[in-house]
Picture (cartoon, rainbow over the protein chains, first blue to last red):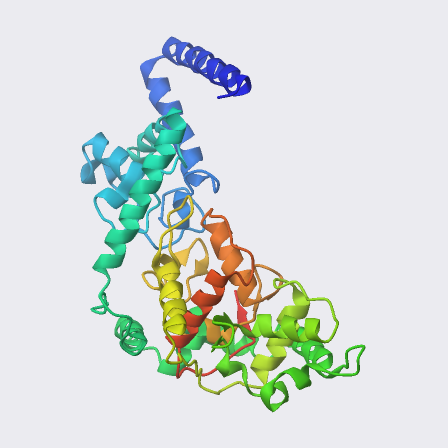
Length: 123
Length: 288
């Protein structure tokens, strides 16, 4: 790869590290809250999760109806890994699903998916 | 490197998913191309899914999907938003080119009441000819520059030609020519293949999900969807051709659109029109 991308990829981990140090400095509760807030932002953002296009979600306007309402997620999916798997690539479980493979097609990064899951678990 | 191999892996998975999807379709005609059986199964799928929708109403897209919307559509038809385009098309159609000829000279029956026969398969050329393509070829044959396939002039011309054909049943023929059958099959394959970052096929929205909402919009059924073209869309604040619809659909699923009137788009239109045979031409249409 080119020098340009090397510098870029070297900078990114440093930035992430700084972010993580910042995150560890705050308290656990505040951390979870801000992750969920970040997840909500991603979920409602049209260029990111855009979950509202298909799902009714508390706090979101003009939801679509293609997917099920996102409610009581914690009781429906007590296992966090299931939520991560559905968002990453639901076609593995259900080849006919309409749901885009957010992880496989890199619509969201792994970190962003984790944040969305944090948000989903508050619903 | 890592990214690259991830992309390869992703596209391999995608191809696999598309195959899985294709093989689960209730076609029954997996081993031989059978358009007659396809069209029957396609139409039955929609009539079974929407038993309350009157058959001819499928050409009204989202407005056929519930009573409230149907009422909205009837109100819209009192002062149709495509009227301006229709007037413009009518005027353009009879206005002579610089050489004195008109569009009338390029088409059977002077271009009136023939929308239902497009696209057709040209056995000399071995390819599908759509109405938009035929219009631009007419212009070029008469020394005029072609129009953009996605802009107002092309929409106006096709709006007028559709309007003079309203109520005529779509009548697409597949001649006894292996190339015509291959074009049909290629269009069908394109229609059912998932693509783009969002991993949608045409069928994901317009076969699996018609009547459902994406945000505030209601997805139209694929059956009869081409019969209403071109359309005025409130979302576009203007008219759109079939080419515009195909290319914007591809962009919306975050795919790379083909060029308008690419062979594959022509083939999709051929497939989609053929399976809508028998349904009336309703264009120009109005859509939310």
